[in-house]
Image (cartoon, rainbow, N blue to C red):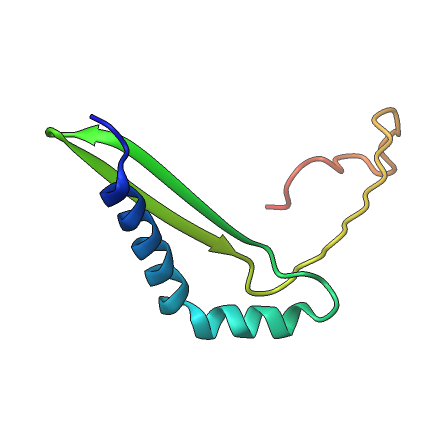
Length: 90
C-alpha cells in the first residue's frame, strides 16, 4: 500500500471539512484571544485497514484562555496547636 494522490486529496478534504465545521468557533476563539495568537493544531494518522488506508484527521484549538494560580505553604514539621486537631467531629 502506498500514500498517493487519492490519500492526499482525502486528507485535504477532511481538514477543510473540519475547518468549515468549526469556522464560527474558530472565529470566536480568535476574537477572544485578543493580542495572543490562536493556535490551531491539525493532525493526520494514516494506517492500513482491511486492504485500504484509514485516514484519520483531527483538529484542536482553545476556545478560551484560562490562567489560574494556587499557592500553598506547608511545614511538615509544624506541631498541632490543639489536642485532637486531626480527628473529625462526631
